Length: 210
Ligand SMILES: [Zn+2]
Image (cartoon, rainbow, N blue to C red; front, side, top):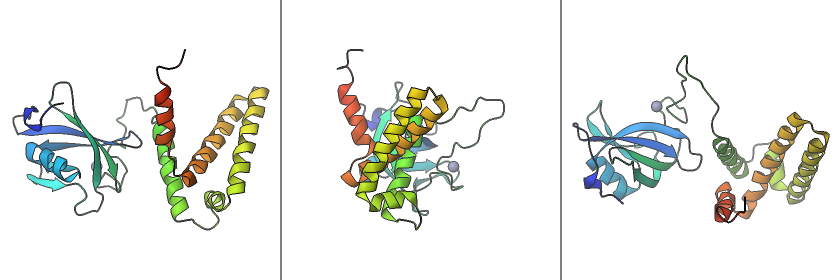
């Protein structure tokens, strides 16, 4: 544990602040915090930064409504940068993009996002479909019909086994995607999320025998 006053602010009195989506792990923004902005963040639980252009404190989302509820705030090993994990109420970027980091630099490799990010994003789309079912949506149909949900995940699991037996690797990937989708659908009416499932996996870490 490190106290806010022990952090090493730069010559302008600022700390670089990496903002990460707590559910998906996606890096959203690099912002700056003065000690006052950091302490205001700790007090309010809402991400608050220092605007270098306007030279003032700003609460993220104060005007746009896209606030960021803080889930954790950690200092790095040198105590000269912080990582803030948040639950965002909307896009982090002023352009409307989810993350500020959407533009690849020419000449750099651009590997796809981490698998967990995609799953967590799918989960939030499903949550939205369940809350506001669009007409004609397959997902909404599954949420309206418990029997169908159970039948489909059984079918998809069987299709996965069949693809695996055939040794059809593209079909294995595709059927596995169907299983994951129907699995995420099935969890939500139980009030469960991916985090509950990964918590079970974490409980088992270190208990496995290879
Ligand atoms: Zn941005």
